[in-house]
Image (cartoon, rainbow, N blue to C red):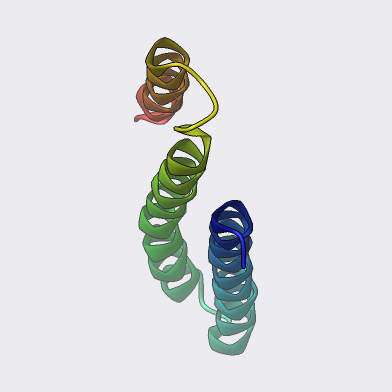
Length: 89
């Protein structure tokens, strides 16, 4: 298996896991049928989402490290940080 494909496979697997967690959380919200329970579940998802973004972005940067310059990698990393900065409360 090529190294690049392994990185893409890892990125896709992380997104599948994150998607499964989102669906599971939605089902739990429906099962509990309480606003306070749904808010707690949503808070946990709020912590998981940025973590998944960072992991998938890091894997992507690792995969691109052989193909693009360090300056472009830095620009991409700064872009991800801007996303976090812009989304902060």
